Image (cartoon, rainbow, N blue to C red; front, side, top):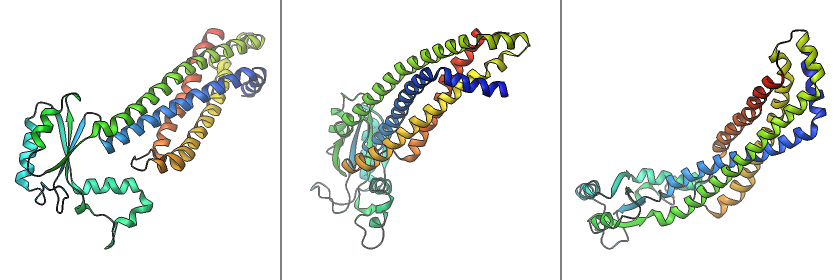
Length: 304
């Protein structure tokens, strides 16, 4: 192992500039990949909260509903007729009924755990009974919705119909565009990093050609000779992953928690659990991008 660690130190010193170039390229590309993973999770959360661009929502009547057409809480018979109209309409792909309790949990999630006490006790600002039941309808085609809206808007028990496409569509489309841009740029940088890794291995193998020749003569295995190269790749990957993880943590704390969540409180933002998922993706991808090409190239340059 003395040979391995001795060559590891020499290799890092000899090709310091190349290793720094690989680390910086990997750092940026891994950060963009992690940002893409966070944006993907953010789009899912926003879609779950606001509805997808293919959805419209029918809010049912409740007690003391401000809508003049509502005479009180929607009855079981009225709800049955509404759901039957939804099921029979060819423009509908699927639907789901959201209860008062589910809507109440969504509201509490938006306010966060630090505001949970405002929804408890006799002086609670809001309760499940204050919210309406709703039917979330997914369309077969977002351009065809007149039939289903005309079929249910006049039914007894329907308070109002909300087109979620205008509410959520622009936000979700923007996030998806940002995600595609981040992943596209990351892909280009990953290719650049792979080329840098290949060039680094080639230069390192050339610089150590005498040592490699001696190791071949004494019968060392290919893996043993290649081990310093693999460790160099692992070091660059670990440093890149740590830097990318730190950048993503900074974005999560200073960007999402300290700024975005204050400006757009109606959107459920990604949390630290989502950050850990993105960090896991980065932690796996980093070593893969360095170790696999290193292993493949060292078999070419270092043969017994």
